[in-house]
Every structure is written in C-alpha cells, then in structure tokens.
Amino acid sequence: MEKKELLYEGKAKRLYATENTDQLIAEFKDDLTAFNAEKKGSEQGKGALNCKISTELYALLSANGVKTHLIETLDENHQLVKSVEIIPIEVVVRNTATGSLSKRLGIEDGKVLPFTLVEFYLKDDDLNDPIITDDHCMLLELVDDRAKLDILKQKGLQINRLLKDFFAERRLNLVDFKVEFGIDKEGEILLSDEISPDSCRFWDMDSGEKLDKDRFRENLGNVKVAYEEVLKRILGDVL
Ligand code: TMP
Ligand code: ASP
Image (cartoon, rainbow, N blue to C red):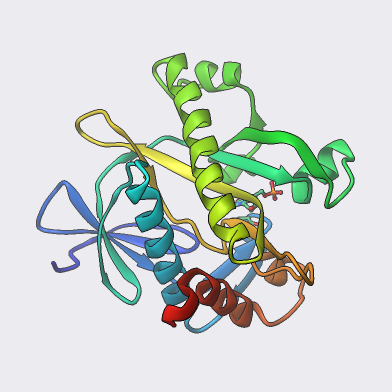
C-alpha cells in the first residue's frame, strides 16, 4: 500500500490518502509537543516506539472485543487504518489524580480516585481543548445522539479495565490516558488515533518513576529511555 497525498498533519502524526478511499496511512512522527504545542521537541525513534506500542495495545484491545480503526502495521512508523470521521471529543480516563485534574480541583497529586473518572475535552487547539459536559457536546453537535456519549464513556471504561490490568501485571500503574474515537462509513464507533506514552501516564509501581510524556513536559530527561521501558514491559520476554 502506497502513500498518496498528505491529508492532514497533526502534532504527532501525518495522515496520507491511499488508492483506497476507505483506507489511510498514519505516519508516526518523532516530534513531541506539550501545552498545546507551546513546548516543542523531537526524539529520534519516538515515532517508531509509539507505533509499536500502539500496535501492541490495539492488538490486545481488539482481541478483547474493542473495535479499532487499525487494519495493519506496515513498517516501523506507518499503520494502515480505516478512514473514519473523528468525533472531536478527547475522552480522558483517570485512575489516579494528577495533571490538570489536580490543578483544576485541588485533588492531591497521586491520590487514587475512589472510582474511575471519565471526562470529555473538546478537541480544538484554538480553544486549548477545554473540558466539556454532555450538554456542551450536544450544544456543539459533536455527536448526533446523546446515547453516543454513553457509548464513549463505556468504551473508555472498558479500555481502562483491560489496559490497567495488563500494565499492573507489568508493574506499571496506568494513571490516566486519553483516547479518541471515529465513525466509519457503516456508522460504527471505532477506537482511533494512538495509545502510547504520548497519550497515557505510566508510573512505575515500585519506584514511582514517570515513564511517559510527563518526562518531556516536566523536563525530566530520558524521554526515549522511558518509552523504550514501556515497550519492553509490554513485550515482556519477547524483546
Ligand atoms: P491532563 O491531566 O493534562 O488533562 O492529561 C490527562 C491525560 O490525557 C494524560 O494521560 C495525557 C493525556 N493528554 C493527551 O493525550 N493529549 C492532550 O492534549 C492532553 C492535554 C492530555
Ligand atoms: N498534546 C498537547 C500538545 O501537544 C498537550 C499535551 O499532551 O500536553 O501540546
């Protein structure tokens, strides 16, 4: 499958057309951004690491009944994916308070939440991805039916259950993560975009060390080493 014209360039990926209008090629970039791209950087090999990590996690989710846009991984930083209409809602799932949740509500950093929290953020860089309610989603016509919002929440929780247990077995605490969904031409809601240390927080269960993009956000160094460690834990003995 060959890349044709560039359709879209995001902060971490480029999307290309293919000869099949139902299929696109996603290219994972080495660029790193934070705080709505106010902070920019690059790590050689980061795109390939995220492509591999996301491929593995999508395979796990898919094997457990989560429908995704991924058709196949083509090489170290390209995936063939179904063309979907992305729902402009970032679904954030949190097990432990940190980041913007702690900042906004004053909840102690590192506090384990009494239940899994699901939040919606508007996917709009110009507005700085604000947090939104179900009513805001309806007002902005982000979905055509309120029931879809419950589906997004349920899917977020299902993905969390599967990933949290998977990572716990590998001594990683899945603190929180962000997922996006798209609608294919049959009207099916598919998990889309990537799941990687760019979009998740992982804390080592023994040392508490951060093994995700917070290393870049907070200038902790060893960004690539941390992403490699996450991949190593995912692959276990296979690596
Ligand atoms: P937050 O605490 O900054 O709101 O982030 C919550 C989770 O969402 C965290 O795992 C990082 C992820 N995330 C993204 O993937 N993209 C974003 O633009 C933001 C702000 C967070
Ligand atoms: N993804 C956002 C950015 O690239 C924010 C973040 O992940 O911190 O700026």
